[in-house]
Length: 278
Ligand SMILES: [Zn+2]
Image 1: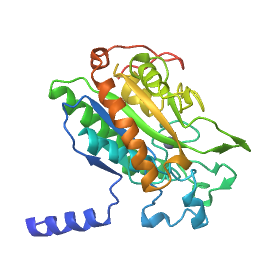
Image 2: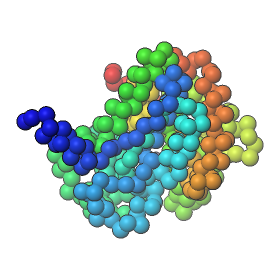
Image 3: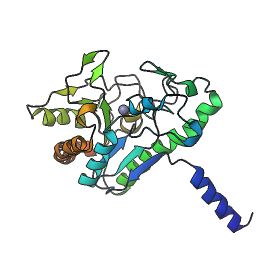
Image 4: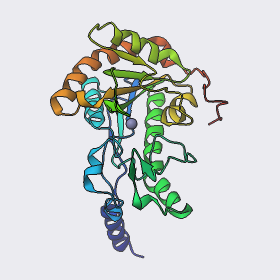
């Protein structure tokens, strides 16, 4: 194949490919790296709507409403690097391990996902290779660049949770989820709870000790300080709400970034069991 043909093929492939993540470069030496595993509700065209009514893509089963806007806002305000996925978690969930039975959901909060019913090993591998793995490789690259720039980074993962769960209202505005490394998460809870108008969840609405999730992969296994922020979806559903939370969280993040011990590699293990070596 000559050079011109190769270049044309590359361009065609690139146009057909669905980039599985976006990054905000930021300053690799800033000290914090932001992650958003569930930023978007889109699917590559070849998957249609996975057989679901389009309205299902407006719900939390497809993504974390508001989390992308808060992540982008914080990255821009702080000058921190960030990585955000561009595909719906219904395609494949980047916040699960490769062998987790809920990696590709067949049933999610009452909705049957027809396009996921006959996913065989080859299709599962395809989704892993095209969508899941490139995002995680991008996060690894960001961490490596920070270390190369002379700073051990701490990781902040941004998610959002539904105000109602099984008919019960969740009272927290924000929750900080963590497993065994308290270095970033506990000071974050304390800082936020200093605002008496907030009810801050410490491992609420659910525990952050999830088997081999994204924070385990990038934080626990590498010995990097990390915390997962869960924001209540009704508070960040529109631009003004997301911007208000960026205003509230940015100074907290900047203060926490000054803690010296979050910029050291320390292995705290996991409440979920023995930690696999990298
Ligand atoms: Zn999420």
